[in-house]
Image (cartoon, rainbow, N blue to C red; front, top):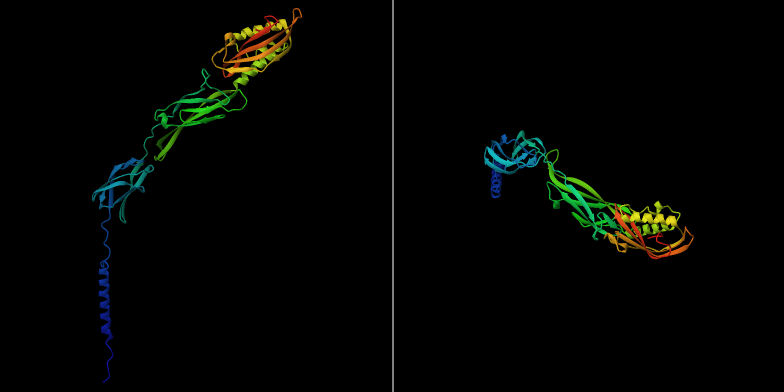
Amino acid sequence: MVPRPPRRRRLLPLLATIATLTLLGFLQACGGNPAGPTPPGPAPSLTAVTPNSGSTLGGTKVTVTGTNFTSGVVVTFGGVAATSTEVVSSTQLTTTTGEHASGAVDVVVSIGAQRATLPGGFTFVPPSKTPNESPTIASLKAQGSREDEPAQFADLGEEISVTAMVTDKESSPDSLTYEWSADIGTFSGAGLTVKWRAPTTGGTPAKATLSLVVVEKYQTTNDSGLPVTAENRVTKNITVSVHDSVKEVGDMATEFLTNFSKSEVSVSTVMKDFTPSCSGTADERKDVEDNRDSYIITSYTIGPPTVRIDFDGRCSYGDRSGDACSDSHTEWHSTKKEDGSTGVAKGVDHVAAVYLSGRWWLCSSDFEGDNTLGPLFIR
């Protein structure tokens, strides 16, 4: 007999069945779902947003109506996610708008990959801008610490206090920013009261301009209705007269005595630094005129002045009015016009000065010493 070949056609279906059963068992063991992913629920829809407008600053609580709302829903207004979203029912939810520029925007509800859109469903409206008035710098005061020292006065190197009085309707003075500056000298400290120190060197008299900028920052909205920080800035200046008082008074006293000692110099030039506000000025002018009428000064010596700045209003010699007192040792040799006799006046000349209108002025002159030339030479 001839042997038959193997029956392969029956073997192949059997192997396929075994493989299928093995794969199903593997999927079940691994938690697989041979039936495929769970199909999504019905897509949401949108019908209305109430209210349908609100502030660009956000915070408007709205009710959204539609269908098929479920947990996990996300709501956006013009692409900006809403907050505090709560599903009330499958047809209603509540949410709160975020910040957005002004204008109508689309409202979108998303549940997973499914979404519904309500075109132009909500309009952002900018709030009315509340006017904010600028602060007011009511006054600036610059004052040194010496007794009776004039306001807005400083000697070289002197430190004085500078104080501002500021009011504002919306902000307390403590919440404002104060920016102090000066064209010369330096500031120290901050706030409403600071210190300013005059430069230690430089020509005098000089003017220093002290400036204060008060800055108020406040919250408002821009043209799109979005929140921004704005500011008001106001400026006020004060001028301080800077002096080297000892030198200035001493120089004036020396110049006065020098001009007086030159008989050819006019009375008006001799008296140019005297102020008419002092009674001693009229007395001194009379003395200079009488001296010119009666004497010719042939030689003189004027020593360096000793100056005191007191601002107490009096000079001790002669009880003269003065904020500064200058003493100079002097000696004059003169010829009397009437008879040609000569004489010497030697002693101390006391010159008083006052501070008025931002500068020093001479106020009186009194001579104390041996006078062999007669009472009209110099008092």
